[in-house]
Image 1: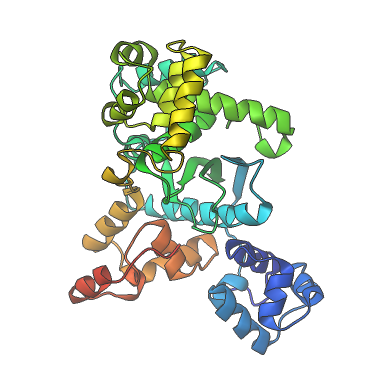
Image 2: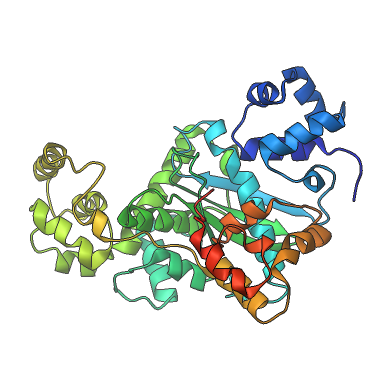
Length: 382
């Protein structure tokens, strides 16, 4: 292990905890100039300060005294709400997604995952792109009742967002480890199931139309807004295919009828109304009438049926972990250390457990008789 303090790792841990330099300095009872010196490699923390860093940021000492052993890259991250969310609200994402990609890559030493396809689709028309992907994946015009499950079957890495990223509903990005590319998506676990469906489909649109061609950090706001609209239009077309949706929407001007169709198409009423308008099934006057009804009935945040459908959870990383542990390919408590040996980073057990949706303490227990106690502990701690 490198015994030199790694200032970049301090910055990573600070970002993951959504702290500014000033906020961290206050927690450590030191000056912000000293935190800056630590992060820029101009000074090393004393033993006493190091203990405080570990306590406040909840990262192990090894994390701060090592370097990555593999080449890791990203082509940029597409955020829903990029233009309205602050850097502090987005800061945990890079750390979390890097850790998720490393964890996925580690599991592939033991498990053969679904292959993540790469398509050369020179198409920026969302409707055409959505129809093409539906045909390619043999989905026909069928409703999709679980977008997360669909994408995991096609090799995507999906995790839940940290709760502190309250103004970001989803994001996705290419992550590359030693030339091996993964597309990772993080989604909000506090929205409704129906909104979750749309968010995941939105990120799928970015993956298909934008991710291999553009780095979102290089775009002007107007260019990014255009791509966000394209991703929204893709999601609508992918979830609500034109011909089948038009045929099914026999009463497009009736709000109750629209909300009832959520049981068929698994999409929010708000998204269906936008699609109905886009397809010309209603005019602007009817659209305005529907919007007024939604406001009057207080359906902006919670729609009918929202509370009847549970959010879907990613399961690929959890199931793969359980499989290698159950078949004695690796001992659970050894996984964080093995990741450190291979990748040069020692993540907190709790971070890896949260990424894979494993019970709290999974990497701390080895005996089978501890399973019940693990399951009694709330794993919701991102």
